Image (cartoon, rainbow, N blue to C red; front, side, top):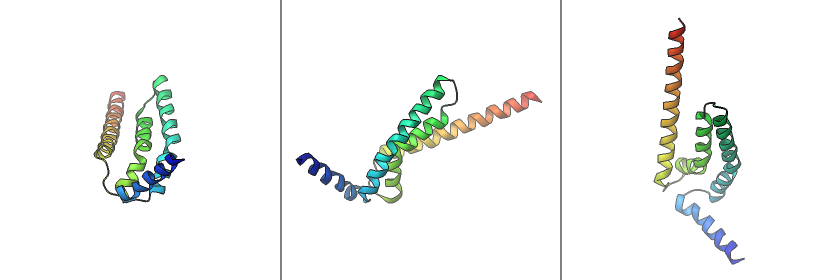
Length: 112
């Protein structure tokens, strides 16, 4: 049972490292796992039936970094890769939205 005590000490130290409540961080971290899994299933299903994967990718990305988003909002010492993933999500979402709007405008122009 020594490993449980070591785990508890490590887990509670996250609060000091990041300046957040480790219980809230842990709940978000573990709570996001089923939603991340569902997002991946949604992504795979959409890919197989040749639908857009933009929303499933953004959803999976969001749940992947959700605990770290909490850190970004209320904490400190956030790992640099988290900022990269968040920026990547924003760029990908913007790029996908721009492409969709452009395609719809072209379709509307060609119909007239």
